[in-house]
Image (tube, rainbow, N blue to C red; front, side, top):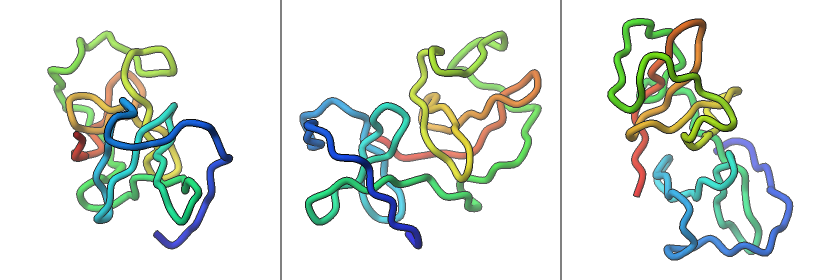
Length: 115
């Protein structure tokens, strides 16, 4: 990571029992919490973002067909999928890959490893 953005402190401790989705990227584990990727670092929480890469591009993919929801589904704050920061925008985690609502379809912005 070239940027170092700290998240404001909160009482929640991220660990294997906290219940938040763990996301693997750039060789470490982050915790997906309220649309933020939290990374524990030197006693504070860093804000991370899934970078735009060949694995996670931000191309338009109008022919993407997803089995994670029906074609009428619209991603947004209350859609039921977890928001995840990707580049300079917000995607939604659907069956292990990133969806971005675009015009009348969802773009596939690549796979992320979760556990």
